[in-house]
Structure formats: C-alpha cells, structure tokens
Image 1 (cartoon, rainbow, N blue to C red):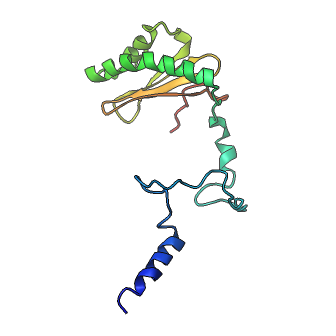
Image 2: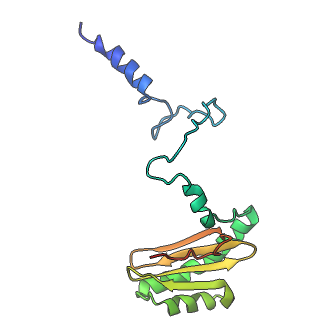
Image 3: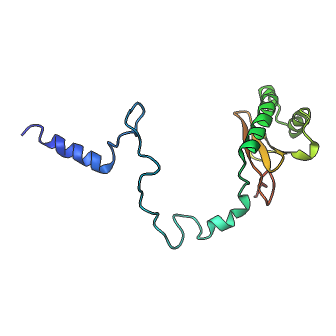
Length: 165
C-alpha cells in the first residue's frame, strides 16, 4: 500500500504542466521550440479584462517607429555618450532641467534634438534626444535611478511622450 500514491501524484504534476522539462534554471532538457504546433489564438468579442473594446486604437498614437539594426546601433552609441554625463548629474544630486539640457548640449547634440522637462510628482527630469532617421534616446534622471533607453520616435509626438493630467 505504501507508495501507491506516488505514480498518481507524478502523473498529475506532469498533466498540470508543473514538471515540464526546460522550465527551471539548471534543467538541461531543451524547451519546446517556437516551431512546435500550437493551437491558434481564440478570437474574442468585446473587451478583455478591464480594457476598452478599442483600447489598441485609442493608444495607436503612442506606437513608435521600429528601429532598423543600423538605427539601433546609432542609438546605442549615442546612449553610451549620454549615460556618463547624466550619471554625473545624478551623483551630484542635480535634477534641474537646465543642467540636464546643458549636459546634453555639451555633447555636441543639436539644440533642436533635445527635450527636457521636470518631473511633476518627484525630484527629477525626463529627457529625449532625437537622432536620424526616426530614433530617440529617452529616459529620466531621479535620485533613485538613471534611465537611458533607445527607442523609435512616434509619428504623433516624436520622442518625448506628452504628459496628461
């Protein structure tokens, strides 16, 4: 009688997906490939969860240009120049928009390519630097972090997403 329940528990775990190979760190079994057959997604009518039925359309203005490999590389090089300058400001506790703007201009970035704004709810600034053709280096400088991200520009607003209240 002892141990009869073990095969049943193992079978239940496998059936529930709890013992799928390749899902844990150190597991040497390969994960299923992307080419494995998967059932097509279920079409749903109406909103899913709390989202409005036309949520994707309503937020379409936020869609950003997808960067090419060369654009991404150009953005990464620019971000590599920006990060140390803004890290110096953060370390000094300087979160003034003017200081951030000047640090970016001191890198030789064209004045028209730079946007900087004070954060409204906390000390810090948000910034954006545009680069050809449709790329942006965006982020923020706050007491707790420095963010530097390379992304595409949005057709509606460019690099720095407008704030709303």
